[in-house]
Length: 126
View 1 (cartoon, helix red, strand yellow):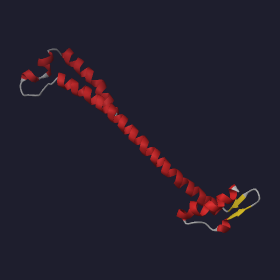
View 2: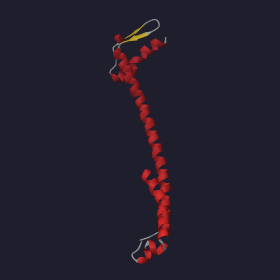
View 3: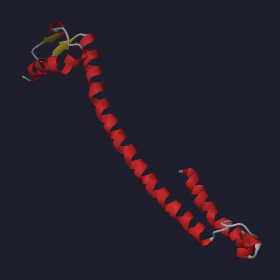
View 4: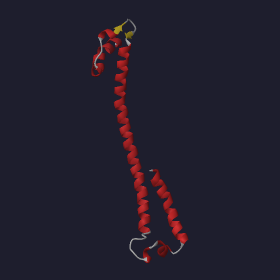
């Protein structure tokens, strides 16, 4: 009974691949016999059916990955923006707007640069 249903469904399943010759399949008492050509067509139909699902899964995963990266980027960008607002060097001309004048020592400047390095490294990995 199941074999008969299978053979009856073949024209619908293989119609988009050019169909098949009904002589390529024979029903026995307990087995279905088919030619290699029909098996190849069934394999192609299977690959096409799976590929649409695979493309959909890839599309969903890529969207998820992009949204996740964007969330991480927003966090890093927010931290860099906070640092820039707290240390707004070189915004205007003149010696009073340079880092050494505002932070007073080289160690303070190095500390500010050291605070930025992990953020830039994380941004480069994105």
